[in-house]
Amino acid sequence: MLLIRGKLWEDGRMEEAMADLETHLTHALSGPPLDPMLVVDACDRLARAIEAGEYAAALEEFLSVHEVPREMVDQAIGLFRRESLLYKLHMELGEGALEPLCADGHVWQRRRFPLGVLFHIAAGNVDGLPAYSVVEGLLAGNINLLKLPSADAGLSVRLLHALTQVEPALADYIYVFDLPSTDLDGMTRLANLSDGVVVWGGDEAVRAARRLAHPGTKIISWGHKLSFAYATADATMDDLRALARHICQTGQVLCTSCQGLYVDSDRFPVVKRMAEELFAALQEAARELPPVDPGLRGQATLRLYNEQLEAAHTGRQVLRGGGVSVLLCPDRELELSFLHGNCWVKGLPRDRLIETLRGKKEYLQTAGLLCAPADRPVLTELLCRAGIVRVTEPGLMSRTVAGEAHDGTFPLREYTRIAEGLW
Image (cartoon, rainbow, N blue to C red; front, side, top):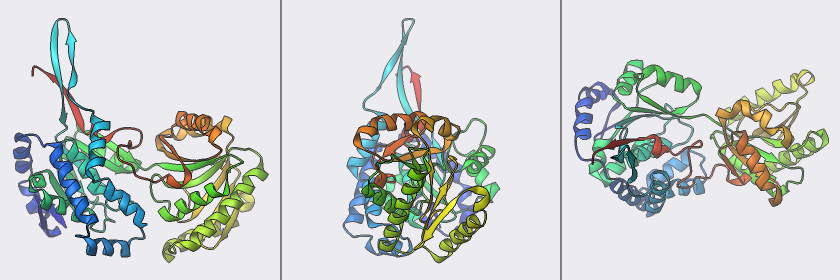
């Protein structure tokens, strides 16, 4: 489904949608700037309508198809509320005019402008994230071209269409295209119309975006990241239960999802005990939550069976049962887990933390910390120096909070530019 200037079009009308696109973009860019308060008001009205039950049928349909905890949906809706967006604007762009530039007796005023047109290449690991990416582009004053991910279930286009119905003035700033990444001609045409390309994806997606865009086009990448938990030997069972529930709830498919647990020790008995306790907590969480899709569970089973066959060579031990597993590993390598309730546990003393992680610095995201309160400051400092951009409690690794950074930077600043002139 396409969304063109506030109207839903069938996918087969892609060429028709592209025919006059540049003319429409130029016309919108030539008009008055988009008022961010207009965006805030429209998003708040939409969020309140959802909370009041006006979209109950669509929401229930979404929840029936996707095993998403209701609290995560409520958190996502909260990001569209007025107070959340105003706080985000304040944190990322500040208040008032920028300080003037004074040099050699001359004074230049500074103002912030949108990049112009943003082309969002969205990822499909979080339903609704493509829509929020567009909202961020709107808050910064940009026109937004969104390429839906192949796995999108229609939530993003529904949300954005609803937003244009709430505030028709936004229709000229939102375009949604449902085209495959293999359509290089269509992707190139959209990239060439843009001043910035926002890429949600891994290294290959970023490389592909660079090949599509003009050399002068700004590439803003929110790449695939790896997150993990870090525990001291005195971590509590309550913290392990919170971590296990987080692992099972998220399916470990988010950039903030825990892939594994590092233990602040190089003593194998300590690491093994922690692995056994986490395994017990995972089994407990799995019993309380909806079962994993049989196909996904089967994939993990095959990989675990292979791990068991190679255990004599790798030194890895497999703890499995109840639809979950823990790999007890002798190495310290940060890696992706088998997902969906299957994680690894490795020893990593704090004095080896920076040397182990700094080589993966560009992939680091969140660390969940399981330790006594007295250890939190020094371990947080070490983790952040190693490249982690977010340290939190184990059960809150994938929480969403208004005003927090994306991968260590503020997106609204990335989506704008500063001009100096004689205002």
